[in-house]
Length: 58
Image 1 (cartoon, one colour):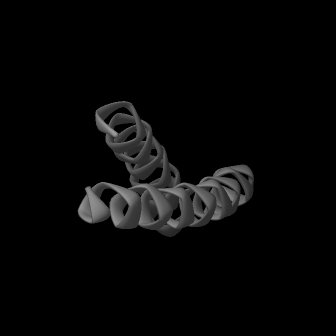
Image 2 (cartoon, one colour):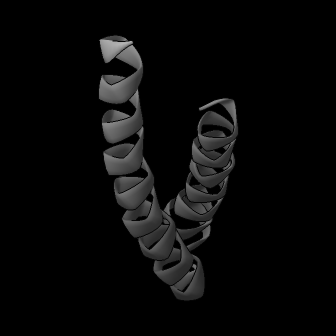
């Protein structure tokens, strides 16, 4: 589970960096990368929910 949390944190860092680049500098490519990171975050969060529920059952 700790590895999953680390992956989520890394993806959040990428998202924040790229979203800021798009918002502040108008970098369209950064916007694409931010959206990709957001999609990956969505997948990781679903996985986290699944793992979290399993851990709670123990």
